[in-house]
Image (tube, one colour):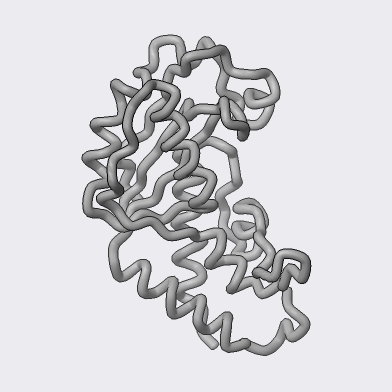
Length: 196
């Protein structure tokens, strides 16, 4: 926490207000699991949860190449699990329809958007002009948490698992798309209901 753990700073209040504004837009929540983090990585699981917590989409995705062992060790998804799953080009029209004209909350938006675009590129698909507005729950929680990163000159990012523990949310960061989208939704709700 910040140097003043018992006092609400203005930046924390702003984070709470912003979280309330985001929830007022009735966002959907997106999470993905991937074959890794490098430029060759692609999406192998995606989930979309609506503002009430209802699952809109929860699907494995069959990648072009085998899933690296290191990735499987993180999320537990292996090649046999995705063998009959739809490919990204087969699943994308459904994803695109659910995202259209929506506000989308993502824990670490930069990573997930990069992997959406990157997976598109691997299949030779053109990334469309975005028809949705995304926001980063991780950055919002970092501001709320209030630990300053002097080297990067931003609020220090905190893991989804750490955010869940901070609010005593009885959900674990499982590194599966549906569970983590639900957890990210819960973190945003907890920030929004904080009083000062």
